[in-house]
Length: 307
Ligand code: 3PG
Image 1 (cartoon, protein in one colour):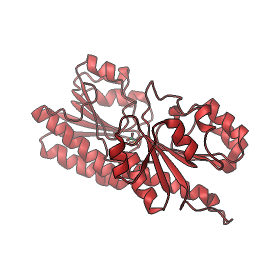
Image 2 (tube, protein in one colour):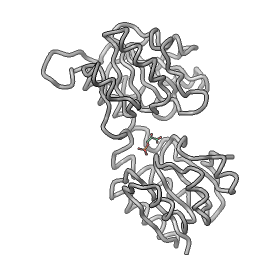
Image 3 (cartoon, helix red, strand yellow):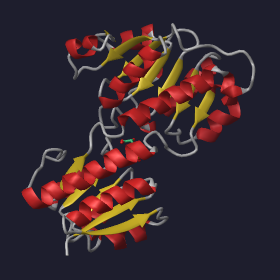
Image 4 (cartoon, helix red, strand yellow):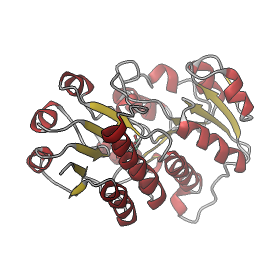
């Protein structure tokens, strides 16, 4: 029987697993479940007899792909697929897909949760500040960026965006100020929210020269990927400016160094949790299951990312 495996180090909400199971079993396939695994060995063993796999940020590297001798498709239930070795998958003829947009509202809401938490001094009771009237720069205007813009307007923020791949019309249609350069974004905005993917062009691209353009009381919010921010430059900005803050769902590698020196200006979630809502898990998980069924039954490759 065709086997679809859910392999999630960070488990989906039970309601999402139930929904995925229904889609898979209705299609006449069998569902396997590997959740909260702690060793790579467990993943290598679990993929060995799977025809399809649903993952989240789980690493599908060459070892995993080589061990998955029957695997035809990997679906990353989420947006970023930097955790999948696309080349290794393509060499084996495997299709890789993501589920764009399905978890984007959850990630956008977390960005505001962190901003409000910091603006109110981590809820310590002392007088804080409001988000209303403050400038917010959205660095990359994809699904999450679009949701960030919608919520920011509810807060009464002045919203800017930079994205070289999205037309000015699309951004302006949402009532967002479109800037032509990334420098302009950082110069204009007290808050910057990162939504760039992690790839060879973006790794380390949020660097000292960009961050130093930010106005007073600059706050960098990262719900994207840790490595898009140049960590050495981030430390340098913290040292240079006692008004700069970093709020992140993806902790820097040397978080302890930041916390030891700048505890009042840094906040990181204990574990990446932007997409960790029942709604996002249901949306992304069920979309992944349906994409697998459509691919295995009808060769539908709509969301393939390794073309
Ligand atoms: C994504 O790329 O979709 C988000 O970063 C969420 O990742 P997660 O599924 O590991 O929570």
